[in-house]
Length: 304
Image (cartoon, rainbow, N blue to C red; front, side, top):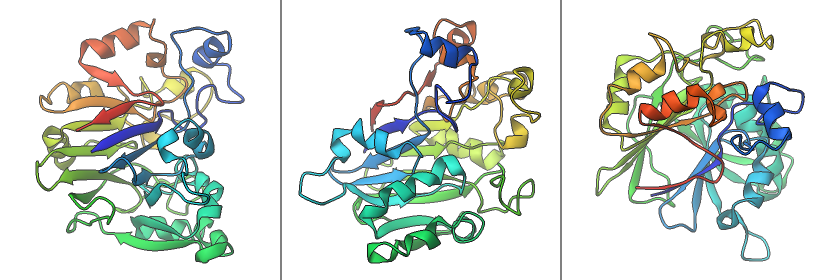
């Protein structure tokens, strides 16, 4: 399986258009230890020709421009053969509008996400006005049997419900349902090798840790370093956990949990522009690396 990181940042990217935090400022001033980052998304492939996209970032057109393997070879075609939505957040879905010329798209998501994207943020309904009727919906049922995607015949996909949060515009905000946020396990049916992708994680439950432990590649939420990071920087009144993201540091932080995992290659994704690990000169970055944890970046290629 080929895994390509199209975007590694949380919502807003780095630099964020209205932000002059330490990282955004450093990037604009040309500091080499801070990278440009678009909003989080990955894509995977069995054959390197047909791709399954996870989420459609608002930056999807830039990401395709930076990824020759996703660009058309025929007069009109798309290499993106399926799209999986892990939630209905703006930074994970808005880019679908930019792909409207390629309708209809094969879309996989839970019924809860499908509901949001037809009502409170009605992208699916809007796209019915384009050729092909917009999308072809395939329902994902968390904690049920595996599902398959035709362009990856050697793989099976599993969805696990995550405790995170519903989008700010959702009537389920602060009272999310089981299907509002999922992680996806992709397993090779022949070798048993596994990718576990979960860019939004507010609470680490035992069954999630067990699945992390069995993964070969773990791409996991690295949004904030401390729970009060956004408050301390004066950018929000909310904790990381209020937004649905467990902090990396501290006694209850994700690093402590990742330290207990021996098998997987541990890689952070969905990293907020305020997070000090995004400057490779910072002590926080050096501490993270000392734990054997990597920071994903736009254009990162992984193969298992």
